[in-house]
Length: 97
View 1 (cartoon, rainbow, N blue to C red):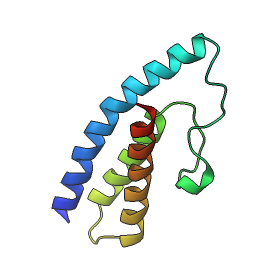
View 2: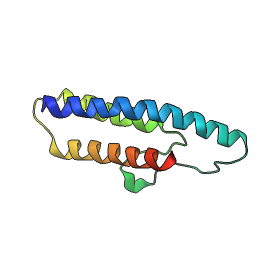
View 3: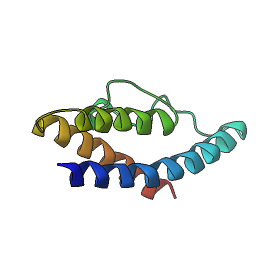
View 4: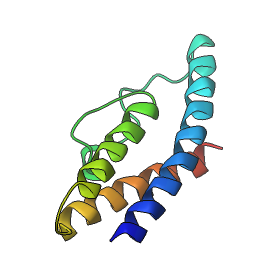
């Protein structure tokens, strides 16, 4: 289980750096009059909120991973949800580049 948590944290570090760069680009686009949207993800992505930037989503996944790391036994459903959210982030960030 510890190896899974470590791998998730490694991926979160990469996603966090990419998210900061993407958020900066989104700020620039919005200042130019572009980027008129209400949320980066729909409800099907598994996030319980809507945001116009990547960082809140990364922090949400980080919270899920932190919660998993504090559990005595692995909750497979929570792990699956965290991995799916991370996957959605990675896909959108790759598309955004």
